[in-house]
Structures are given as structure tokens and as C-alpha cells.
Amino acid sequence: MKMTENQTSALKITTLLIVVVIMWTSVFSVSAKAISDENSTNTETQVSEENPIVLPDGDTLTTNTTENEIGEVGNIDIVEGVTVDIKVGKGNYKSYEVPQSTVEDALEHANIELGEYDTVNKSLKAQVENNTKIKVNRVKYKNSTKTKKVKFKTIKKKTSSLYVGQQKVQKKGKNGKKKVTYTSKIVNGEVKKTFISKTKITKKSKNKVVLVGTKRRNYTTFGSNPTSFKTKSKGGAGTITDCNGNKIAYTKVISGPATAYTAHSGARTSVGDSVHIGGVAVNPRVIPYGSKLYIESPDGSFVYGYAVANDTGGFIYTSNTVVDLYYPSYSACVNFGRRPVNVYVLA
Image 1 (cartoon, rainbow, N blue to C red):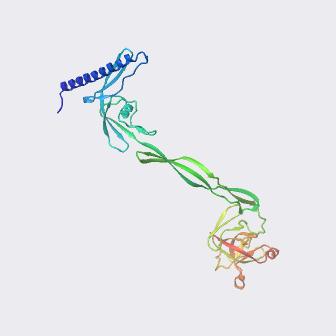
Image 2 (image 1 turned 60 degrees about the horizontal axis):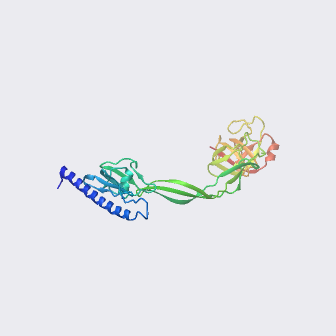
Image 3 (image 1 turned 120 degrees about the vertical axis):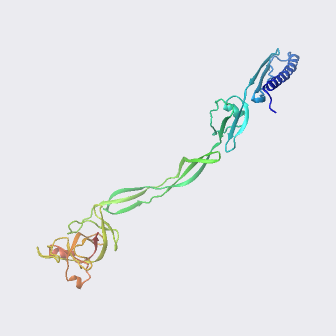
């Protein structure tokens, strides 16, 4: 049954009078005890307590009563009460009757303690009113650690003890280890983000050291542009590296014996060209006329260089020679003799 406004006011006044009577009764009792003990002590006696009493419609009665040596009584304060809704973590909102004060006081009155990292959707110093909604997020941090690999670096050093295009591992690399600490921020039981909070090297990595050759080879060559001395692959397509570090692509490589021939100046080749250094005789059924070639010995000690297939000869029927190299003099041919070569058909 809902009370009228007059009934509510009467109830408040009646309750207030009852509290006052109780308090005065307590004061008289304490005063009597103080008089009996006045010869033994002159110290003030505190008899007050701050015990809020919630009245109808949210009014709150608080007492702050003190008595000195002559029995004087302190003040009685009436504080307006309000209803607030508080949600903690993943829970639901709950209603609390609290004094009309700050958010901080409201939480304390509702017996809700804040953790070190907990957050509130409102300032703790903000004033609360009826239906104020307060949300408390429970926040904590959790650490985890993992051991990870620290990759070694490769350091290249130039050396004249190796030829251009050659490399040598002087020192092997070794991976290190590190301990990584990850920190997760957990809000209301859910991980919101994870970040690296600490890294500690537990084992240092060791760099790999590679020596890179800078020494130039002295070639015996009659080619128009001697270049590569290092074969990277044989048989099918691949690349070779010239002395300037340039890569040359080829479609196939043919290995076998090579011989040398010469002819008088102005002599014509099978395709009608004048004989010249860099023009070579081939079996056109194996290496078609006009093919651009690069020729060197397998060990790189001899380089004929760039060439073009523009001639042929009887050698293709009488021997297993793969190429006959043109030289401008007989003595040069004798000097070359017969030796194994790699003939690269360029792309």
C-alpha cells in the first residue's frame, strides 16, 4: 500500500524523534560514567559513531555525536539517499541505496573494492544521482615467456687471396637465443591485447664470415671479349658469371674436345663471313650457324670468350671434336693444341 505524502513526512519525523531519544539516553549514561571517573582522567571521551540509517524514499540519517567533559552533544546530519545501478565485470547491473555523494563513496557503501588496474566508467570524484549507472571493469595483466631464435648475420669480406667470383666461408654462423616476455591485458576475463614487454638475450649469435675474391686471373685468350671463368651449371639452361660479376644466361652447354685452325686473311667461312677471331667451326646439326657462344675450359684456366658459329670443316666426320677455334696464326693453333672445353649456347 503506497503512503501519502503526509504519512511519509510523519514517518520520517517519528523515526527521527526515536533516534534522538535513543541518542540522548546514551549520552546521559555516558555522562554519568564520566562524572564518576573525573578524578581519574581528564581525557575527552568519544561516544559517537557514523552509522548511516536509510529512511523511506532514500533519505539517510547520519549521526556525528560527541561528548566532552561537560556533556555537550554534537550535530545530527540528514543526508539525501539515492538509488544507483552498479555493474561489476561481466555481471548484470544491480541497484544500491547509497548516500548522495561521490562515485567512490557509492562503491565503498556497496562494498565493492577496486583492484590495482580496475577502471570505472566515471570519475571517482563525480557526484551520483538517482539512476546513475556505474560500470567497473576488472583489469589484470598476465605474463608469459617464450624462447626464440636469434638468426646470425652474414658478413662479407673482400680478399685478394681468391679470384673474382670465388667465395669461401671463413667462419660459420651460429644462431643465438632470446627470452621474450609477452604481457596480456585481460579485461573482465577476456584478453584484449598482447604485447612484448621484455626481451633478454640468453645466448649471443655468431656472425657468418664469407671471403669474396677480388684477384684477377691472367688468361690465355684470343676471344673478342673474354669473360667468365666459373661454371655454375652444366647440361641444361643456366648462368655463368663473368670476371666483372655479370651473369650470362645460356640455353645449353656442350662439353668435349676443341681444336684450332687458321686461314689466310680474307678467306671466307661456310656462311660467307671473313674469317676472324671469335668465329668458330661447328657441326651445324648440333650447333646451328649463327649461334652465339661462349667458350672456356671446364677448370677456367683457359677462356676463348664470346664466339659465333659461322664455319664448319671435315673434323665433324673424322673426330669427336665439338668446336674448331679460329686463330690468326699457325703458332697460336699449335699453342692451343687440343683440350677440353665447355661450349655455352647463349640465350
